[in-house]
Length: 406
Ligand SMILES: *Cc1c(COP(=O)(O)O)cnc(C)c1O
Image 1: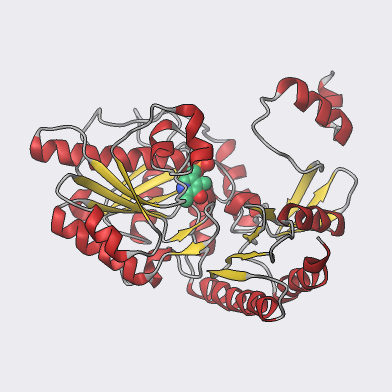
Image 2: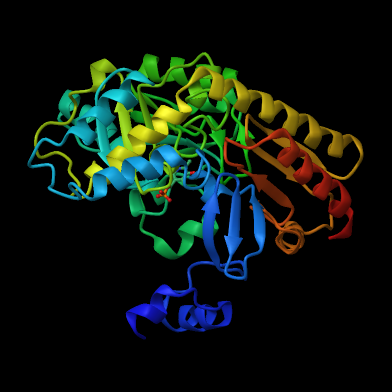
């Protein structure tokens, strides 16, 4: 292929055949080739428009190609792309400051993905415990059906047999407690526990809101046994639930928080922030990443934070989220859905027994509405946070008309 033909939009059949030959088959892709995005909309190679309630798995919270993100990237990419952490670069250092001030107020480690942010949190827990006792190791408590990522450390604390089984041995020092069972949690945490890791709203596990009571017992148990409380806000953070960070609605403040997905407006990033007293657990040489905090991605993240960390913006997310949640609850009362869950613009519902979530996804694709199935009957919505009332209504109407047909 010449450079010119590569730059042209390849047709779907060609892409599917090249994909089948050259890409490891780890993804089940929808049969569509996306070539452009703007705000809450995407376009395929034939010019068909889609309303996107998928947002790249909760990455494009600012909407596709938000002008502030595009401008920041354009400006930075022509000036300096990479130089490594052997040097000071302003975007990365400003990003640590900005991210910290929006959340726990302590020090930040930047990385490149959600799984990496989890690996970093696990290493903080281990290093802290090792520094105290001189003994490495210790147990980590997690919640059933949690999702923390696919690298071996993160996979170890992602208690989903279908994801773990082929990849043992994983860390064994992991205790899994039922979701929203504070008593089970309290008895799982003991002096061998070094960390409790929780998604305040579980994402991949089916959009389950973790109760304030559970989180506050997690806080107490960690304090009692000198373990650290880690909130994984990779999916539920960055304005997704209607506050900058999901923990801000729970009354519970973690010691360490992870972020990734939406933090850089669509570019790959991960980040970990610790409370002030945990900020110096790592010393020089304890952790590093070649690409971490690169100028382009850091500039994008500063722009994305600028858009989302704004009271009026977040107020609107809460408003749209309530409207969406009310609509989904109405589907439940009408018998079209079995259960609706979520907070802010992180929503899901289960179809009634015998119905198929993936068929509803395919129907949506036909009609130009994108969302995803996370289980046989569970449908998840992660619209861009810039979504408007009419767009939420369009999706609600679509479900109302089609939930009974799949
Ligand atoms: C997506 C996700 C991860 C993993 O992020 P990657 O960037 O895919 O490694 C971790 N935790 C949560 C809560 C997630 O949603």
